[in-house]
Image (cartoon, rainbow, N blue to C red; front, side, top):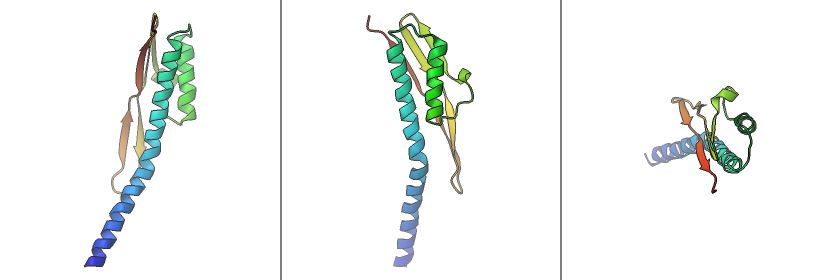
Length: 115
Protein backbone atom coordinates (compact mmCIF):
# COMPACT_ATOMS: atom_id res chain seq x y z
CA UNK A 1 0.00 0.00 0.00
CA UNK A 2 2.84 2.36 0.85
CA UNK A 3 4.51 1.71 -2.50
CA UNK A 4 1.27 2.50 -4.35
CA UNK A 5 0.99 5.87 -2.57
CA UNK A 6 4.57 6.66 -3.48
CA UNK A 7 3.99 5.77 -7.13
CA UNK A 8 0.85 7.95 -7.26
CA UNK A 9 2.66 10.85 -5.58
CA UNK A 10 5.56 10.62 -8.03
CA UNK A 11 3.11 10.48 -10.96
CA UNK A 12 1.23 13.56 -9.73
CA UNK A 13 4.44 15.53 -9.20
CA UNK A 14 5.72 14.41 -12.61
CA UNK A 15 2.47 15.48 -14.26
CA UNK A 16 2.66 18.88 -12.55
CA UNK A 17 6.20 19.40 -13.82
CA UNK A 18 5.16 18.34 -17.32
CA UNK A 19 2.29 20.85 -17.42
CA UNK A 20 4.57 23.57 -16.04
CA UNK A 21 7.12 22.68 -18.73
CA UNK A 22 4.45 23.27 -21.41
CA UNK A 23 2.81 26.35 -19.89
CA UNK A 24 5.77 28.35 -18.53
CA UNK A 25 7.28 29.25 -21.95
CA UNK A 26 3.89 30.52 -23.15
CA UNK A 27 3.59 32.86 -20.17
CA UNK A 28 7.22 33.91 -20.55
CA UNK A 29 6.57 34.93 -24.18
CA UNK A 30 3.43 36.80 -23.10
CA UNK A 31 5.34 38.81 -20.49
CA UNK A 32 8.10 39.61 -22.98
CA UNK A 33 5.53 40.70 -25.58
CA UNK A 34 3.65 42.81 -23.00
CA UNK A 35 6.94 44.49 -22.06
CA UNK A 36 7.72 45.14 -25.73
CA UNK A 37 4.39 46.85 -26.44
CA UNK A 38 4.65 48.91 -23.24
CA UNK A 39 8.12 50.03 -24.27
CA UNK A 40 6.93 50.84 -27.80
CA UNK A 41 4.01 52.92 -26.49
CA UNK A 42 6.22 54.72 -23.96
CA UNK A 43 8.88 55.62 -26.52
CA UNK A 44 6.47 56.52 -29.32
CA UNK A 45 4.38 58.86 -27.17
CA UNK A 46 7.33 61.28 -27.58
CA UNK A 47 7.97 60.78 -31.30
CA UNK A 48 6.01 61.22 -34.49
CA UNK A 49 6.07 57.57 -35.58
CA UNK A 50 2.89 56.62 -37.41
CA UNK A 51 0.37 54.05 -36.23
CA UNK A 52 1.29 51.83 -39.17
CA UNK A 53 4.99 51.93 -38.30
CA UNK A 54 4.25 51.13 -34.64
CA UNK A 55 2.00 48.25 -35.72
CA UNK A 56 4.79 46.85 -37.90
CA UNK A 57 7.30 47.10 -35.03
CA UNK A 58 4.93 45.22 -32.71
CA UNK A 59 4.25 42.67 -35.48
CA UNK A 60 7.98 41.98 -35.86
CA UNK A 61 8.31 41.45 -32.11
CA UNK A 62 5.30 39.11 -32.14
CA UNK A 63 6.85 37.05 -34.93
CA UNK A 64 10.20 36.99 -33.11
CA UNK A 65 8.49 35.61 -29.97
CA UNK A 66 6.28 33.30 -32.07
CA UNK A 67 3.09 34.95 -30.78
CA UNK A 68 0.19 33.48 -32.83
CA UNK A 69 -1.22 36.60 -34.48
CA UNK A 70 -2.83 36.15 -37.89
CA UNK A 71 -2.20 39.55 -39.44
CA UNK A 72 -1.17 43.13 -38.82
CA UNK A 73 -4.85 44.01 -38.37
CA UNK A 74 -4.90 41.94 -35.16
CA UNK A 75 -2.79 44.68 -33.55
CA UNK A 76 -4.76 47.79 -32.61
CA UNK A 77 -2.71 50.97 -32.40
CA UNK A 78 -4.28 54.33 -31.60
CA UNK A 79 -2.51 57.66 -31.38
CA UNK A 80 -4.45 60.58 -29.95
CA UNK A 81 -2.11 63.53 -29.64
CA UNK A 82 0.68 62.41 -27.31
CA UNK A 83 -1.26 59.37 -26.09
CA UNK A 84 -0.50 55.97 -27.60
CA UNK A 85 -2.58 52.82 -27.02
CA UNK A 86 -1.59 49.37 -28.28
CA UNK A 87 -3.62 46.20 -27.81
CA UNK A 88 -4.16 42.77 -29.28
CA UNK A 89 -5.41 39.36 -28.24
CA UNK A 90 -4.48 35.80 -29.05
CA UNK A 91 -4.99 32.22 -27.93
CA UNK A 92 -2.41 29.50 -27.39
CA UNK A 93 -3.50 25.86 -27.41
CA UNK A 94 -1.79 23.61 -24.85
CA UNK A 95 -2.08 20.00 -25.94
CA UNK A 96 -1.66 17.74 -22.93
CA UNK A 97 -3.00 14.20 -22.73
CA UNK A 98 -6.51 13.78 -21.33
CA UNK A 99 -7.22 17.51 -20.98
CA UNK A 100 -6.00 19.90 -23.71
CA UNK A 101 -6.86 23.55 -23.06
CA UNK A 102 -6.51 27.07 -24.47
CA UNK A 103 -4.86 30.04 -22.81
CA UNK A 104 -6.25 33.44 -23.82
CA UNK A 105 -4.02 36.50 -23.68
CA UNK A 106 -4.87 40.17 -24.21
CA UNK A 107 -1.72 42.28 -23.96
CA UNK A 108 -2.43 46.00 -24.00
CA UNK A 109 -1.04 49.31 -22.85
CA UNK A 110 -1.77 53.01 -22.96
CA UNK A 111 0.82 55.70 -22.42
CA UNK A 112 0.74 59.48 -22.30
CA UNK A 113 3.72 61.76 -22.59
CA UNK A 114 4.73 63.70 -19.49
CA UNK A 115 4.38 67.05 -21.27
